Image (tube, rainbow, N blue to C red; front, top):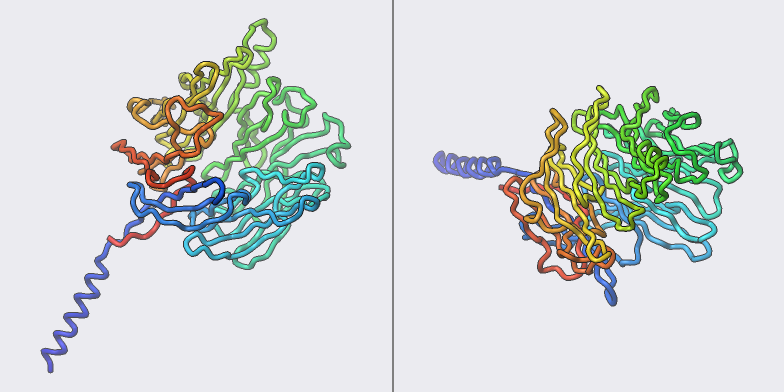
Length: 478
């Protein structure tokens, strides 16, 4: 009997010991969206391993649905769907568990309604998740209402709370990395509706508040500055792309948003959350003003930016793209501006022909991927892809390898996505010579493995138009 007890105990110990010694590792998984045309007209979310294996369908919805936003851990999706009529448009935000497909909650009347057009305006930051993924901020402007306000939705309690209540339009919300504060842009005016104010009384400002909407205060005041070119057009003063520093102490932002006018060139600004230090980091607007005073037949203007903070919070990396507009060639060129916020020192990189404004930095901000465009017979086509490296000590940029070794990036969907640990980067591919205005709807998805540079098309067997949308991490028992 004693030997039987010992034998049973030994068997239990073996099972427990072997289970405890199983290694649990975090496996990066790419999320992709497949779009199919009629008769299916569907959008399907898949997950796939970086090597193209384990392709798995997660969620499917009609292609006519609106925008969607993934949670920080990429396991929930906030889907905007139309449910009103053409006379009284309305939209609902549905929170969906991607792994199960279950609907977790719904929020009605989301978005901004153009009353004269009877349609909705939705920007990329019209809905934003909190860093913890437990709350959402969204814009709301019910049909025929007088202004746009920001609202907070708590997933745990399913409660909706107004964050702003004013006659101003409050848009472009952004969470601080620590989740304690929010920032947004507000159209300040003369105390009346915007259209009732003179042009010199209309200003966009950056507003900051605690995460619950309390302690609201403006941290900028553009009424008496010479930062902007004098213009009566609202877009010359519009602010957007609010990007917090990792330590939640500074906010970088862009002016002249959504304006293609030559007299309203873009620039990047930085302000501290106390509102005591406002700096213009780039000087493209100043450059434009100086060129306008000459008889130079060409006019250079900035067409796009990307903004990325270093992990330390004291360095800001800005990618820019410019165009020789009056030449009518639309030849693009671009480069980088690296700014030390604490010391005020600024580094400008060598300009690269065809470089687009959008680029993506690795999680540790030491490497980047950037796309280029080419002008061929009067048509803009996709160009080579660049993989680069930054030297933070002196702000220098170096290109890694030959750009022709990497697949071309899509003009229509130029975003790139790094896995959380920085080992992989994914983007939608384009065919060499393919025009940017008429891309084929059968794009592949390139996943680059770093540092070996191995490239995999992870959707070779998947029909339709395919785009990467983010990475999630799952537990993989080794």
